[in-house]
Length: 385
Ligand code: ADP
Ligand code: MG
Image 1: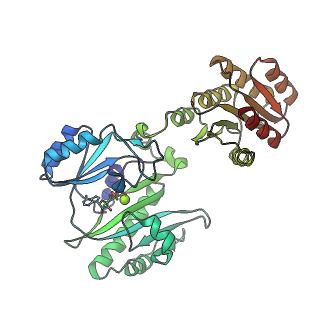
Image 2 (image 1 turned 180 degrees about the horizontal axis):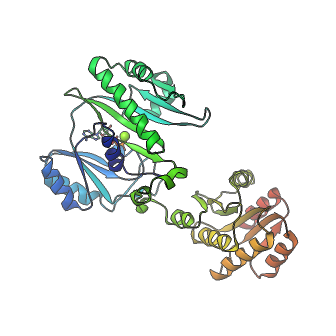
Image 3 (image 1 turned 45 degrees about the horizontal axis):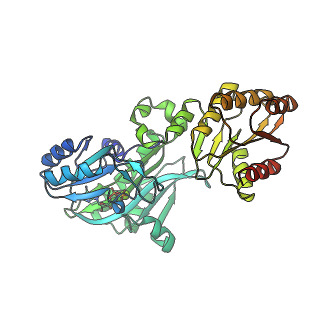
């Protein structure tokens, strides 16, 4: 789960990590008032669930409140397109108005889960700021990575080694050690999969400060934090993804035209691969899970059909726990309800498969069945061809 920069900064600040003075605004009048409070000169920052805003015009220095208001008017309601948003961009509904800080140096600092070692790792670089992806590609030696032992946690001497490698010394080095240890506490206590400060800066006045902040909460730990669901900004999510969440379905929008309904994440991956191999382009990844009911299958099918990019549907289900006739009923129910005329290919296997196929073929829908994944994928691609 994602949160906005201003929310992440509130959390960092509550753990003793210095952040710029700021106020979040919902209207351009509030932007003006907040700018006045900051003394006129301030930084206006669009709050969206993506980075790369600086280069896309989502972060701007202004010199007086009217200029702040004008910029607010320009930004509110606009879809900001950054390298991380995809071509359709994300709508700006909140703006952070922040004191303009005089920056001397910019660093990159984050702690995230490294799935290959199953451990958290701290990543730091003296080449921070907006181009960290480029640094990682062109000069990986400038990036310092420390794998954290879950038993001992992050130790001060390890943090100090990193701070020294960043070129910090004296009090700044010690402040940085404390900041890293605090960041690690945030990660653990708030159940984060990522905490990232880019840039972490040294101000002209000689203080360390988090100038940007990104936090991802681990979805599996949300039940431990009652306040998290209220922190979510639904305007930043795809409406179909929100609906899928309500029915406990994993749905991810992709860019093709074949809707895919699959049970199990592994089978979903395999389905996408085989579709691609046959020259098809999946429109989504939708996993209905193991023990899905008829209602759940029907909801999943409706979500797929609500996406206007979808020109055909491929269902690939292994009915281990689910019975194939139940799946067929769910599909028929949903497709009839929304008067679906799109081509559908269903590949299923498992208990009551013959009954399921029979129901589908008798349903009057534009449906074909297949016995194997390869055959099904070829068929749907051909039907759309
Ligand atoms: P993004 O990562 O989405 O581009 P950032 O918050 O990192 O957005 O802002 C981009 C750049 O703008 C930063 O690298 C920093 O140089 C500058 N910046 C951001 N906030 C401030 C601020 N409050 N004062 C001065 N400069 C800032
Ligand atoms: Mg940034």
